[in-house]
Amino acid sequence: MSEQIGEKPIEKIKDAASNAARAETERPHVRRYRTVLFQIVLVLVAGSFAVLTFLVKAMPFFAVDLQITRAIQLINLPAFALLMNLISWPGFGPQSFILTLVIILLIFGFGLHWEAVMTLVAAAFSSGINVLVKDLVQRPRPAANQVHVFASLNSYSFPSGHVMFYLGFLGFIWFLVFTLLKPSIKRTLLLVFSGIPIALVGISRIYQGEHWASDVLGSYLLGTLTLVAIIRIYLWGKTRFFVRQPVAPAAPQEINQG
Image 1 (tube, rainbow, N blue to C red):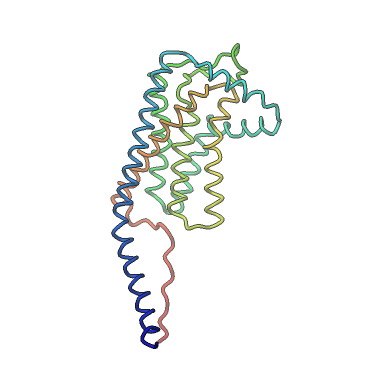
Image 2 (image 1 turned 120 degrees about the vertical axis):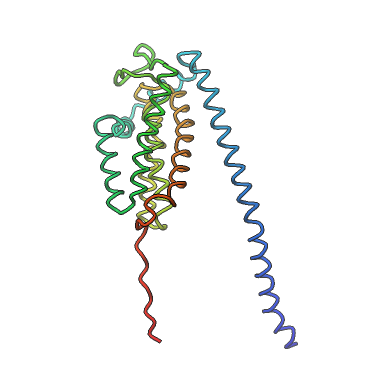
């Protein structure tokens, strides 16, 4: 009887060790599976953007674009209108330049020099790609006789500069917050506050009649590819530049009183 009781802890230890060993052997397979899945998603996103760009180049707007804009603009709530205007406001100059500079200086002030450099790259790269694609596609913006246009802008419509800037710039900040900060209320709030504009800016651009829904869709597709490229560059340079920067305060060393 005593021998059986003594064997149970040993069996539990063996089971725990075998489970840990099994988990270690499974992890490479899981990582490979996730990598392949991620690559497939990127290919689908790139293919979807290519097809959408071809269709957009062929016609000024789609029937569904008009239906979506009119449906959103039928929302007659003062709070909704205020929210849409507030979401779009930071994407216009000069406030976009001021807010970008302030955020970059804050990141640099916290000692995250490489992160500050890449945040600047994220803002410039996403905006530059947007301008390049706009000039190549040259899609006209919604006309005032089709939908209610809040303001006439002297630039092309596809893709949305607001959406691409928010996704590239704020999306990279969201990534930094998620990866560099430990789970806490502060981290959660920063993720929420940086994520809400990304999620709502597309609706706000349609509501204000300055972009079609297909413009917004194309922006999210291209913006996702742009953000992935920015993160790849950041991770590549993380071990090459500013390697001595303080990422987080060092934990206090325990004093051995023995």
